[in-house]
Image (cartoon, rainbow, N blue to C red; front, top):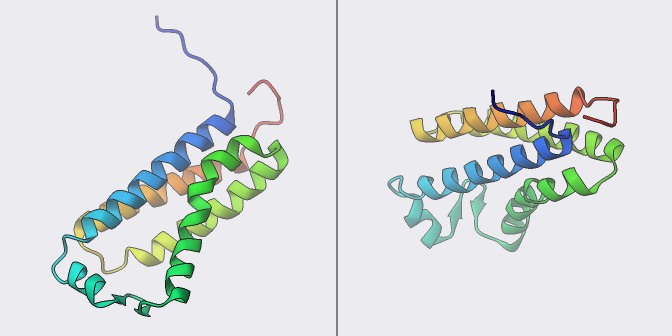
Length: 134
């Protein structure tokens, strides 16, 4: 029989956010192979309009939160970590539900996995054990 170690919910959240970030990166990378995507990037067009500092700042802000969540999940006190994960997990689940509509099949698959992972983040945060040993 194999032994298993009980992981604290903070480490589970850490791992889930790391997985989410990898799916974001790979989904966006593979999207560049869609015909016209790279040309749009080279000509300065985005789904939000022409490239500007404001557009890039907004897109960066959207990715800063999930990129910080692995650290915040383990570094914040339990109560703050729980609420930050509840809010961020819910927000990024909703964003991905909106983003995958009309996407190519690979993007929809990645999106469904991202939705599952962020929903799992919400579930772990919502059911955060009161017992300090978990």
